[in-house]
Length: 79
Length: 314
Ligand code: SF4
Figure 1 (cartoon, protein in one colour):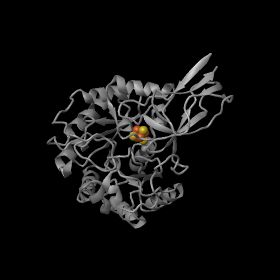
Figure 2 (cartoon, helix red, strand yellow):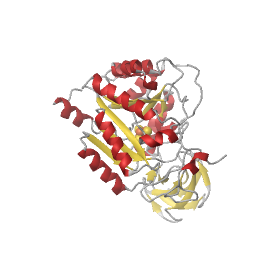
Figure 3 (cartoon, protein in one colour):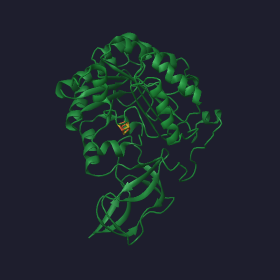
Figure 4 (cartoon, chains in turn cyan, yellow):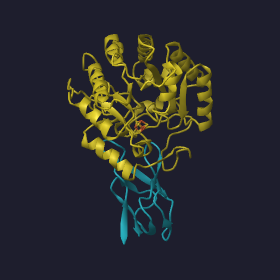
């Protein structure tokens, strides 16, 4: 089954916009819950987004330099 | 307008980020995610409470919220001041006070099973008591339905109004925090008012004298261009007014509208500052890039109570 992994929402007033600094996984990688998927930067600091479930990375939907907001799909996992 | 003009006032030792990936390697945090994080978010939204975690865009939100803790911001989310380092919305709340907010905060504390609740607020210069009564009501509401929860307040300066400070102190929060924020010289720049430094010290002095049952706490954010000597002088001033707990963290610009970071303090430097502060007699010191006064605020509580009263009362 294919699952879209999205950037989680932080809630009202919180920082919800970021730019992609780099992927920490490649297509074909096996990933587990909690593994860092991607590094983002906001105006404030750098953030890593942990993987919400186990699976294999089949597609990356954003690339370095892209602006992302909470709720945006980041990649697709096959699980 | 993208950049704040005042950024040019001070030469920048380590330029803040312009393009990607310019943060030093130690400034990396987990983005909020996972079931526990979401359950905290649901409680915050469900009870319609504000948190400084969100309003200040705190980089620790992912960490704290997945431990099911948050710092509640009372008296709304619109601040009557406009400090250059802060992303909380500034405006005129027109003397509005939500009288049901204390209960909602208390219920959120219960829903999250928070054992040490930290309550802060926007600054409300539009209210005659600066919002002190709302602090008192919130502390009482929390205690009422969470009898085992300790309470820490982090208050504004109430314009130096002793009666307002007393109102809050009379609720006997276990910890009374008021942040000095920065060294004396930089108050004129960052807070647009150099006299606020003295005001903050007076507030802390008053609370120290009010009762030895209340632990007095303050915090500094570094990286605004202050010197080592100025930091040490500020710590000395805090000790002199009876402050016992201090937190020191890295200032991080919430958005491009706030003042740029002048310097990134290394983790080693933070460690040194921690030692210096301990040598000055603080009972508990936290220092590190992501330290905020509310970050892991529960950790020293039982130790502090033991140290001061010989037993853990609550
Ligand atoms: S450090 Fe304080 S403000 Fe930041 S997320 Fe944690 S509780 Fe919230």
